Image (cartoon, rainbow, N blue to C red):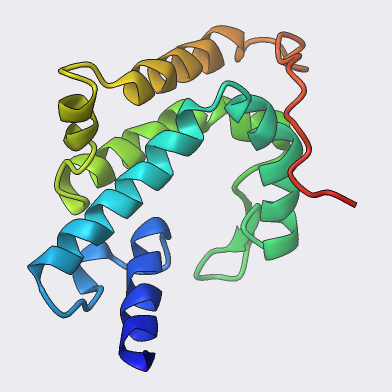
Length: 158
């Protein structure tokens, strides 16, 4: 069982950005395919969520602050603000998607194409994701992003 736990731990890295996908060690091609599918599903499922932009603003940004991701220091020690607010994170989401697309296409070997086979040629996740990105672009001029009105469900029960 410890061997499977090590493999599972490696597969989880396909969903993160702390390592280059190509540097993740797995014991064979089937596990690489599984990792590519897992990483692809993680990106497209989150970004296709109807409440994705609200979750970025209200939940992900505070996580970035707590994790020290919202700000960083350059080589000279000068503080760089990566995300100034939840609204700033939403405005930068289309640019993030450009990088995510590169990751999907190249690093994760287009694993998302399997969804098209499952849905008989249509990729419902990418369609909804594209709507979210287009909406983020559309509302980005509003300083308060007042068009973001959806209330994501609570995911943690008391």
